[in-house]
Image (cartoon, helix red, strand yellow):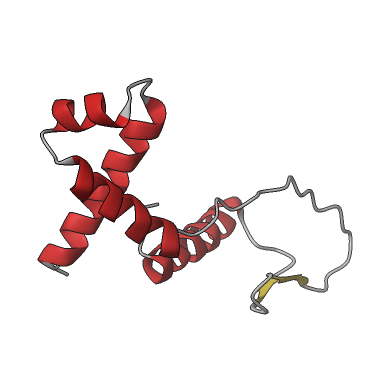
Amino acid sequence: MPHSAASVRRQLWIARMQRYRDSELTVKEFCVAEAVSQPCFYQWKHKLSEVEPATPAFISVSLASSSSSPCMMTLPGGATIELPSLASRSQLTSLIAAVVDATCRESGVQP
């Protein structure tokens, strides 16, 4: 599916803001290096901070069950994931990838 120009521009600025956070440059130095104006930088910084999702926290989970009943996970938003008791590693990997992909599409960020 093709991306709109606004979507591409947004992704460019998300990546740019990450480069800024990773740099040790001042805003002025960074803007010169990126060939963007400081007002434009601050406008995008403000725009992205309004809707930029918080970095999700992940916790380690281990399953130890001899039961043949499925494992259920309820996510913070209320969605429930039911894992069959005999799910293979590849099935679990595919499920997790699909959840990450859907979450990223919903929030407008790249996985």
